[in-house]
Amino acid sequence: MKKEKSPVAEYMKIRRYMLNFVEQAGEKSVQAPTILELSRKFGVSRPTVSKAMKMLTDDGYIIGRPGLGAFTNPAKINRLQVTKYKNVALIVGDGMMVHFEPYYLELLGRIGIGIARQNFKANFIQLPSHQQEAAAEEIAATPCDILLWISPPEELSPVIRQLRERGKRLVVLANTPDCKEGNLYFDYEAFGYRIGKKLLAEGRRNIAYLLNTPAWSRPLIGLQKAYQEAGITLDSRLFFPDMIQLWPKLEKLLNASGKVDAVFSAVCPTSVFLPFYHSLSPQVHSRVRFIVEEDGQPAESFSGWIFRTPFQKMADEICRLLALECGGIPQEQTGIGIPIVEQEVKDGVYL
Image (cartoon, rainbow, N blue to C red):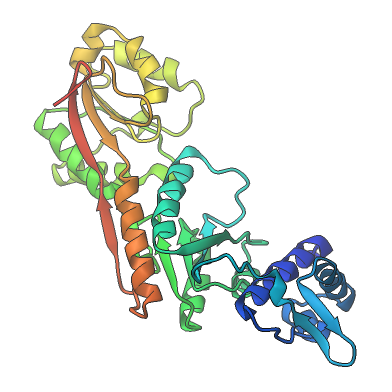
């Protein structure tokens, strides 16, 4: 059964489109698309378009001229704006997120500072569904100089190809290096491979991995590859898939000598992991190698390997590619892996 379009959602699309139209018109009063043209463009009824245009007229963005049609109102343009900003539209994930986790917030914050310094302004695109046609229509209806798509799901890769074929400028931060449409990615697989090599050199064979989820499987893929090259298959029973009873289960394994000799926490950062770590005995601390991501909480009284997601390096590269793409230098074939680097910590001292 085909889902009916929400009049409110469609009204907001038309409003966004026309506000951009007014801005692009600048100091000139330009004739606006007719109600029929907008109805066909957005695939909605004329009453829905009429409602949107009436409210834009009431707000002063559109001026009706009897016998001539509707025109943009230059008086609504910000005359105090000293420069004409380029517009970057952003999509995060599937374009339907309601809340952004700290990972995305920190990345978006750093990107925001970078694009602001390049005289970009930004707006977010919310996609109506995962259907490729609907997603492509929504993006095409959003005027922008360039699109930045962060972590697009695999099923929407054809939409990216379609946009590029239509000449849309865009930069894609992919989840993996396997994404053919991606321009950049965090190289977690290479990081996991390097950690695997170091653990092998220490003679460690029983690795507990937190958490084995689709979003955080890339370090594990690299880790397994390193062991497979050494002719060793890691015990998948030590790969925890979720947080349900995680700490009691892990504590039991750690207290049983020989069950686990390394814990690789790809998901639980220091603010989450350290309370558990500090509850363990000194014997466990000395026997087991711990690998943990550092977030806002320093690794106090911790011994092991700490790694950090290089948000600033990624933000810098994204801003560089946005500038190149906007400057007419296509980046479609660019594939940049941002490395993840670990650091030795001994009793809270970074070595």
